[in-house]
Structures are given as structure tokens and as C-alpha cells.
Image (cartoon, rainbow, N blue to C red; front, side):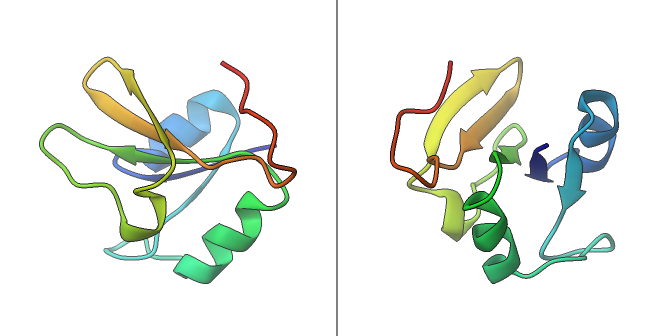
Amino acid sequence: PCLLTGHEAIPLGYYTGCSSGNIGGNNANMTEGEILATARRMPVAALTGPGGTPPRYARSWTPHRVSDLQVRVAPPADGTAAPR
């Protein structure tokens, strides 16, 4: 029902029941375009670790702090506010 990408997306996706996807590194399995297309269908969040920079495609997404992670949530496709 959701997609996580970025820092620790694989274990966090496992524990939350979300899919994980990354555009680079050893676990690259998606393109930026595929992540953005997915965000039009379901909730997507980009995770950034301490001192990290969010991916270019997620810099305008609403940021939230969860422990030492920055979680940027894609806006809903229908333009409504994301749930908190």
C-alpha cells in the first residue's frame, strides 16, 4: 500500500509492510520516473539519514522528522493534504 525509498528503505519497508525502491546503489531497482509515477497511485516517502540530502525529486515534498531520519512524503495525487 506504500513505497519507501532512500536510507534504510529495505528494512523499514519490511517492518512497515511497504515496498522499497531505490534509484542508485547496490539495491537500485527503480528509476526516478517510476518512483514519481508510483506516487500518483499510492503513498510514497523518501527517507534521508543523518546529514544526508534528499533526492532531487523529493526536495519539494513535505518533510517530517522521525528519530534521526528525515521523511519526505509525496503529495497525494488528488492535491489534498497528506494525513498526519
